[in-house]
Length: 345
Image (cartoon, rainbow, N blue to C red; front, side, top):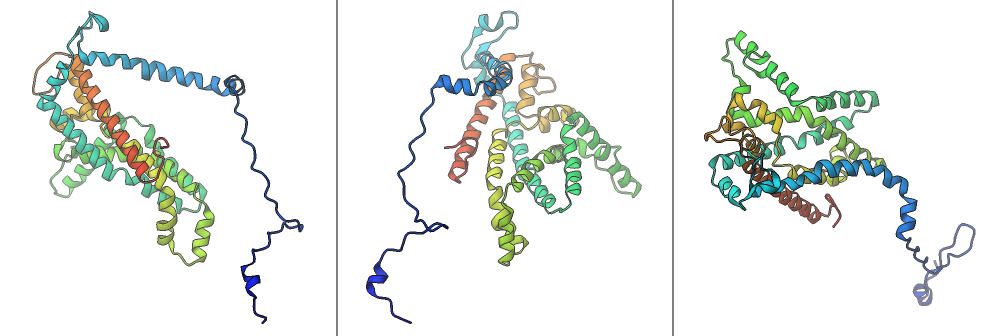
């Protein structure tokens, strides 16, 4: 072969030609799009804005206007004097709150139950989505989604009733144990296992909703990546590790941020219904504490007091501020992992 000369080696490559033989020319950059005025954008998006008005009104009436009631936490509120004429006491209600050992016990229960649900409940929808996604038949997949998602529409009254029929003192489990000479175990009234019981109830009720979210995320992954990996000899586990899990990372972090933001809300209705069965020591969380001391008059607690709306509002405000700190911290953690979180950085 003829040797390549130095001039040919150092020469710049010829411009790439199009299919029809003409060289591609580098034209000037496209001019920036003109910025439309507010009036023109308002006229253009008028229909879309009108569609959002009902949702904004609902948000304003039921989420933002009630925030004016925060002032109750800084007053000695009297229902007869009203919000404006009640005596302003500053931080007195918060001082009483932090000095009450029942409050810190409810706070501890909230953190323990939230941690157990984060460890045992959060991975369940992800595992279900990965298993259901392997089902090739769309009819079978749709049937599984419908069956798993159905309990989401049940109230906790019905969920607890179903668990009572299976795990209660006269439930299916204890009838089976007694028939075989084994001592019965009433899980529904055991304070030691209550945190696992409420976690199992939450998994059975809400795992289907998380399943749909993660299945949607799996459907957004480019299927050609799996085909290319299979051609290169990657097995099922390697495809899951290098394609599926990175594809799910964004939605997993987003759901984790939302979960941490609601970490202090572990189920008011669920706890209040089962409070009498397992005792206040196991079932009292921040939500039930705020309700019982603020509206219920402290029934079933170690102290006797009347309904104190300001005290209950102080407990609720403490929980709201702490939840805001948690969700902002979780969102910053999502940004540290390179994800958007709730909003872009």
